[in-house]
Structure formats: C-alpha cells, structure tokens
Image (cartoon, rainbow, N blue to C red; front, side):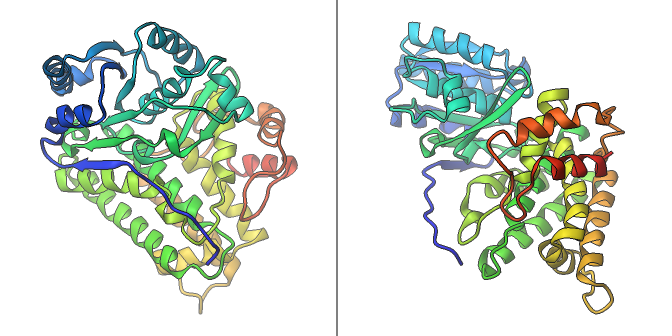
Length: 386
C-alpha cells in the first residue's frame, strides 16, 4: 500500500422519508439565505419542493431558485447564478437531482465568495479562499457527486474538473423512492457511471492493495447483482437503494486508500461529452471497453486480475492478455443487456475530431496513472471505440 490521507465530512441521511430531516440539517448549518438548483419540474411531482418550501418557511430562510440545470452543465448558468447569489447574500446552496445539479451547486458555492470569474477554478486551478456550504437531495444514482470533492463543468469545447475537499457537500439526503420513477435509460447509464468510478480506482499499478482490491471487487459484484434485479423489476426499492448507496461508495474517495487510481478513461470521455454532448455514463462505457482492449496488449495485469476475480475467467486456461480481452467482452455483454451503447459508431461519432480531442486531453501532458497515455495513444483508443 502507498501512503494516503482520507477525509470526507459528508453526512449521509439514507432511507425512506429521509428528506424530512432537511429542516434540522439547514438549521445545523446556520442557513439564512438559500439558493436551490435543480432541473425541471420533477422535484414538485416527487414532493421534494414542498418539503424545501416548508423547511425554509419555518426557519425564516431567504429563498431563491433555478430549475434550469441541464446535463453536462455549462459555465454560463453558473455565472448568472453566482451574480444573483451575491446580490441576495446567499450563504447555502442546495442541489436537488444528480451530478449536473450537484456540480452546478458546487461551482456556485465556489463563485459567490470569489471576486473573479468562477471558471478560474476549473481552467487555472485557483485555490479558493472560502466556499459556501452545499447540501444535496439526490434523485439519481450515478455520479456520486453528492459525497465527492470534485465538480465537472463545461465551457464551449472544454470540459474541466476541479477538486477541493471544501466542495464536499455537508449532507446528502438519499431516499431510494426518488430514483424509482427513473426510466431504464438513465437508470442504466447511471449504473455505467458508477461502474466507471469503481473501474478507474481498480486500475491502479499498486500491487499491494488487497483491502481496497477486494472492496472494489465486492462493490462491482453488488452493482452487477442489483442491476440484474432492476432489469427484472424496475420498482425494486431495495435494489434502488443498493445502487444509490454504491454511487456514493464508488466516488467518496474511500476506495483510493493505499492506491493511485487511473482516470485516463475519464479524461478521454470528457472530451467526447464536451464535443458531442453525449451522456457521461454511456460515454464511459464506450471508452472503458476500448481502454481495456488497448491495455490487453500493453499492460494487461490489472484487467486480467479483475476478469478472474469477478467474472471467473480461469488463469489456467487463459493468458493474462486473453483474460484482459475477456473482461472487455464480459463488460460489453453487461452494457448491451442493459441497453447502454458500446461503440462510438452507435453514438453517431466518427474519427474526424479525434486529433483535436486528443490534443485537448493532453494539453497538460499525458493522462492516466496506470498507463500514461500520450496524444497518439488516445487516438488509438478512440479508434478501438468505433
């Protein structure tokens, strides 16, 4: 194991009627002026909006809102809400929804106390002097942003991330009932997103990390088992709850203990979703399958290990390289079974922008830690993804 430091102060409030604890949570955070960010009218249909209205009303909290968040959130909305938040002396940002709403809230929480342009944090890596507190009511199971220290934001063709422990939400309310009405597509692209976070952490070059190896393998097994349950019964609240909690487990950084995660595949997918506005989870499925095929010929030991331990591919019958290829096949079968696309061709993407995307991805040097990728190697992986 390599040395590590782990910190995550997020309070998880999980289960039926967990949203009813919102008032106490806002009071504990000494909230006086709250900005709510979400996406569309669904929060009213789920009854969440009325819970928020009641809590802020009883506590006498100033209240403003925006329901304009879209997938792959853009800097322009954040800039406008930062301006409004400053005018209204907002001191708490509440996100309702999934990763897009949460990352928007995180960016707003960075921007309101800052005198410059909020994009500075993402483009220049500015260290914030202060950050407003953030809370989350999760209605999807995918990004894990509800307990992570990261936010992803787009500006034109650029899709960049920012990490700081101060943007970890103070609390995350998780009622599996809120995810039960999700159609199959967002359910299973969300599961693909969760799986991508587990795989990125598993693909580490650290050979002495038994504890987190087995924890990640167990989380992957649990995710696959509960995905199968949801294929059979989309209304299975126990399976919904397992998947929702796994989203947090996969991305709260606890599984990074003693190892260095890869993240090369995410950097490649961020270029795809910035360029083509595809769904992140589906993009990750496509990129990871190609990445694993590429690693089978370059550095197969980690994919081969996972292939044997989770999917039972026998090391006696298959070489390390063959087992890595088998992992790509097994995961491809899983994605196809859940209706998630597995190639760029299915997404209507050809190779005309590969060079530009690879150039942007490597603007600060090679990407990935397990096997650092240069521009040409990223292009090779994108070609494998066609």
